Image (tube, rainbow, N blue to C red; front, side, top):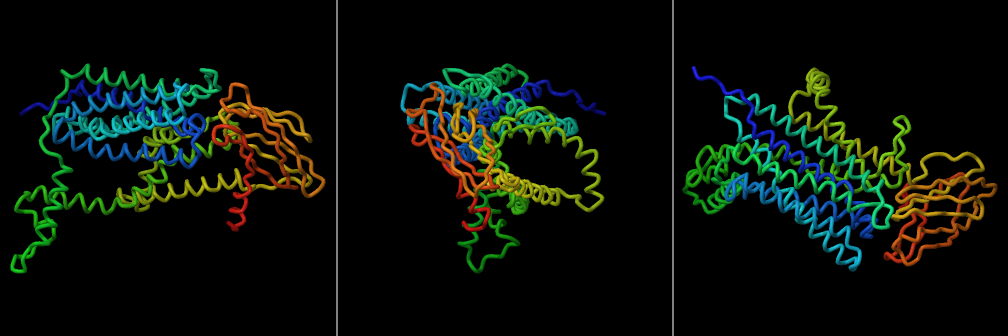
Length: 481
């Protein structure tokens, strides 16, 4: 009787180390990217959101092409190696774009877009290859159990990388000052670039240990070819030709029964996964709109005595994933089985409902931030000023004393109002290091009795500062938009 091979392949640990470093690099850059676009490159919130999501779109498209290249041309090892270098080059270009300030803003923006494009191609291209390449190292069916353990460890590694980078890079951005600015985006981008370099070295160093399978044909290209061939044959089939059970069987003159059967099963599953893009439409807003929402809050978590940065909102998801994986296996899944939620499809539906609920809660939070969703004591009013400029600001008013707002923070000023409306003249001064031509502003603000009046401090065309009354958001609350 042949003895089973239960030894864990050494090469797998190098692959897992490579994945950990690569994920630290990718999520580290993504964590601070939206604030880099809004505060340094002076895009507005909507344009910044578009840039972030196009970055993720190109990464998803690159995933498809990475799989085709690995299966049909380069093989998994070569694809991972080459596209990891592309990823690293993209990181370096983004770092340079955050360092170079002597050129025009348009050039800085162009350089950033090029870096993000290369990063998305590299990160997306290796995504379908690394996990599968690790799976190739196992001997089947003897190591089936160890393969399943590997997939669990791989998923754990992804979330660990996300957790580490999402907690560290925002601290480097906020807590370190460099090049005369109150933040240090070059360091926040540079720190994740180092693990990317390490991941390449780690991956290449174990080449002699890898089981490298030569490329044959891509499942994706074969499936697409089968679909188009079947459709063409069905459309051009004569009326005298024998009818088939389903339209895919028209491809049986070119594709074997196994390929057609697998494709049929995949298409049936694909139909069930139609809601998944809608789920990720919501989930990926953690990198854009949720971070921007975080800039409108003070971030204080009193029971932890900790202030969370807006761009640290990313760490909540991987943190909960790492906590809930064992908790779900031990407690939640057995309970769900008892109430009939015992299939993957039903779990997907339940998860989608919770995702929708989370965004309903996010809407309530936004309503509370801007929409004056709480009562103000009699004869009192509150003025809120949200600082959307990457500089500290000092503010003084004729009715109140002196205040200061840190960059991307919010200031609350309480007024005692004896009449329905009050006015105050605010003097606003930015630090001399701020890269704006106008660093001072005097503006009258209006305070309504027993309400919150909200203003946004921002820059106009990267030249002047301006204070915008957020009155249009109050109309949304009253349903008059």
